[in-house]
Length: 274
Image (tube, rainbow, N blue to C red; front, side, top):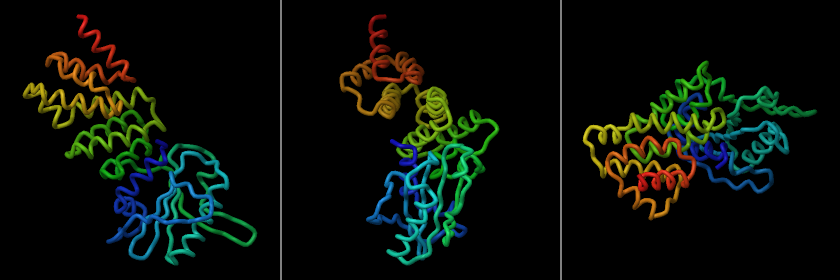
C-alpha cells in the first residue's frame, strides 16, 4: 500500500477531522465526494475530495516532488475541472509527507504568462505534533511531524495508540501508523516500539498479565500475528493454540522480532524439539 494511499483512506474515513484541521471553520456537514474528472491526470491513490455545505476541499498527498505534469500545474488543472463541474469555492491543499528541500515543496502557486493560481502547501515535518497526538483520526500522521527527538515522538505515538479503547480501531490506526512511520524510521524500530508498547499498554494485555488467562493470551497473540502476516495457515494457528501459558508468554515477546511466517514456524519447531 502506498504511503499517499494510506492518507487518502484516512481522509475519506475521517472527513470531518481532516476538514477541521485544514479549514478555518469546522463544517457542520461534510461528505466524501466521489467525483469523475474525465481528463487525465487523475491520481486516485493520492487525491481526496471532501464537500462541505458550500465548499470543496481538495487534498493531495505527496511523498515525491517530481511528477508529470508538475504539481502546481496539476493543482490548477483540478481547480478548473472542479469549478466547472460543481461551481463552488474550492480550497486546495498539497500535503508533503517526507522531508525535502526541493523548491516544489515550498511552492504555493502556479505562474504562467497571464495566470497565477494559488494553493496551500503543508510540510508535515514542520507541523506541531500535539494536534496529531491528540486526535485519533490524525494520529497516524504524528510520526512525520516536527520533533527534536524522532524516536521519542514515535514512542509517544505508540503509547497514544495503546489507549484507544476500541480494539478494531486501535489495530487499524496502528497499521496505518506503521506504514506512514516507514517514511522516517527503520522498520525494526517501528515494529519494536509500536508492537511492544501496544502490547504492554493495552487493556487486553494488562488483563492477561493480571489474570493469567490462557485463552485470552492466545487471542491477543493470534491477532498480532494476523495483523503482521495477514493470512496464517490453520495448521500454524492450531500449533499456537497447543502451547502452554509459559510458551505463549515467550511467543508474545519473540514475535516482536519476527519478519516472516517462516520465523514463527522456526520458533514453533524449536519449542516442540525442546
